[in-house]
Figure (cartoon, helix red, strand yellow):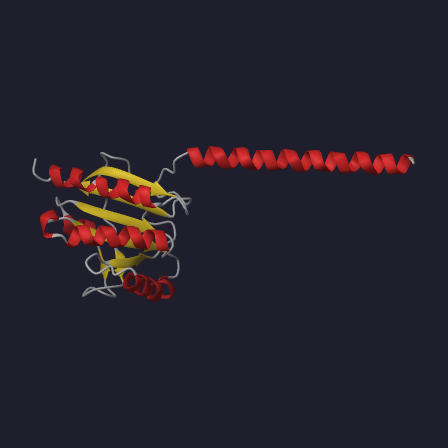
Length: 200
């Protein structure tokens, strides 16, 4: 009888510990959901030069620095870790904005980050075709951490920087699963800020 009571007490103790662990997980998750991801250069800072291996277009296979070529023009950089559906949908919309003559001379490109550029390259090419990214160059930076000067957060699956006149105007960062349709709209709404700045 005594052993049965001990066993019941032990089971109750296990249930309490399990319940406490579940509550902690829920609370941690809600804090994380409310805590925005911070990654990359904040507004006001200068985007430094960096080169990556281009996977698409006429410069395919070349190590290129688009920041250097952009100079004072408005531009959008997407730093990405995975060729996902969410990032593909954002890239497709940004590609249309870059291709639109009324937004000229807006530029943009997508930089994936990987320690294995040869393996990532064909994935990026297929991803670009799938989401019909035709105007913006796509490529791979040969380090999973990205360009050191950009201070990209390892938690960020995508970091989007909009800049003009060599100064960041807007910064967006998203963990995996955070790049929703609403988030994409917010990124697109920031484009006029860099287009207006170019006139000043």
